[in-house]
Amino acid sequence: MEPIKLAACGVDCNVCGQYKVTTERDVKSAELLVDWFREQGWIGEADGVEAIFAKNPLCKGCWNVTDECFWKCGCGKVDFRVCCKERRIDHCGECSDFPCENYKEWASWHESHQEAMARLLEGRQNT
Image 1 (cartoon, rainbow, N blue to C red):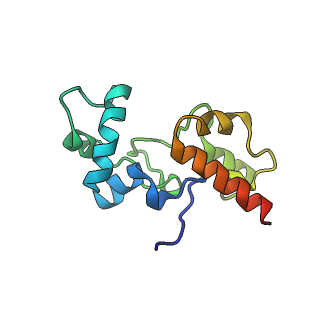
Image 2: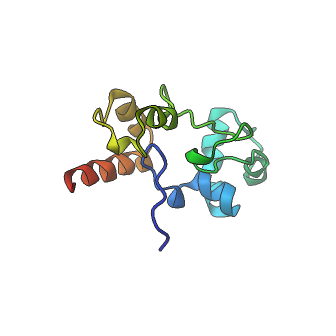
Image 3: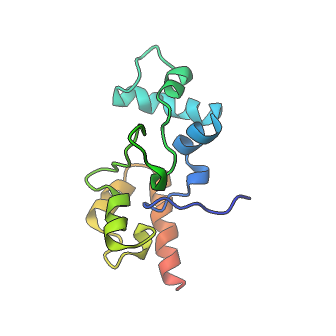
């Protein structure tokens, strides 16, 4: 098992579909993103996995952002990466304000976000 590679938000990049599409060109992960990309208007109704791959680079991990990155690490109202840099912390779980209202809102969007919040909360309790 690969060591955990935490994004600023606390998601383990190694299990993130968007990260795996970029770093591994993982077709199964891309297939799981098709409906969401359509809903966001990023690909057309008839488009599929190849259209997602054409958006490359999707995500190289929030600590490797470049001007070419599709995501730009904008996660809702707050760019968690920028917030962490300003506070000189590695991820949101190290913040004295965690979980802030912006993080709670972001966590409500997806199961993987909720899992990240739970993992970070658990880590705080174990320290």
